[in-house]
Amino acid sequence: MSGASKISYLNLFVYLLLIIIPILIFLYLRIKLIRQLIIAIIRMVVQLGFVAVYLEYIFKLNNSLVNALWIVIMILVANQAILRQGGLKFKMFFLSTLPAYFFSITFIFFTFFIVLDIRVLFSARYIIPLGGMILGNILRGNIVSLDRFYHSVSKRQDEYIFYITMGASVNEALRPFMAEAIRAAVSPYIATVATMGLVSLPGMMTGQILGGASPLVAIQYQIMIMVAIFVTSAISTYLVLIFSSARAFDGYGRLKQDIFIFE
Image (tube, rainbow, N blue to C red; front, side):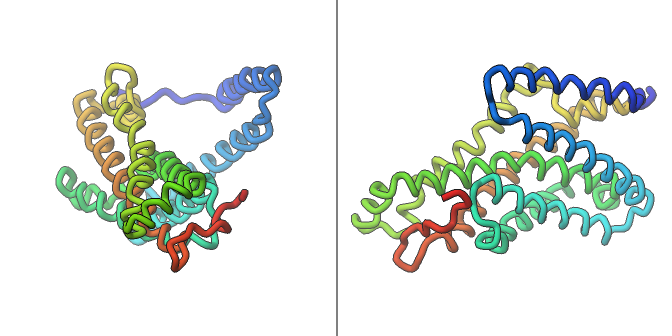
């Protein structure tokens, strides 16, 4: 079975023009997202173009140190994006939340030894795509958890203070808010896992099938990556709330109001 058919640059450009349809909808409904959409599309094309060039070189080089450096760079960028989209100040939280992602990604890569040979895993063609899929999929969950947690505590100060005055420690008082935030973050993943194969044909499986792999092999890899994504999301969302809360509250257990970008 041959690989996926090539798409000409002209045909791809014509396909990109379909973006005009949502732009017209936004114009009609006066939704102020057109500028952000156009910038996002341009960034996607430019970034993926650079990535294609880099990966061609990195795959040929296949150096373990370079591969690890690429994963580190992805983690740094992901941390910055999560904080920005979560509405928290970059300078205040970047170093405190970074260990959460390094730990969760490192842990999940060690678990891959259960199913993959060490030489295969550390190959650039495996470690970089796997790291990218995991980080890309946990972005949304971590953004949701941070946004839900800190805005809930900020808006429900009376409830939080009530727990404190009743003798609860700061960690005990924050536990219901953490549970709510993590539930909101992981629920979409559970729904995705539950409907996979019936409602959706996942990306990794589709890519492997288009690349010529057997559907049975593609299913095995998809099961592995979905478990990895869910486990990494659960670990990282919990740890990022724990680590960031150490910076977000003062010595009296009060939420600092200067932690938010727009508040």
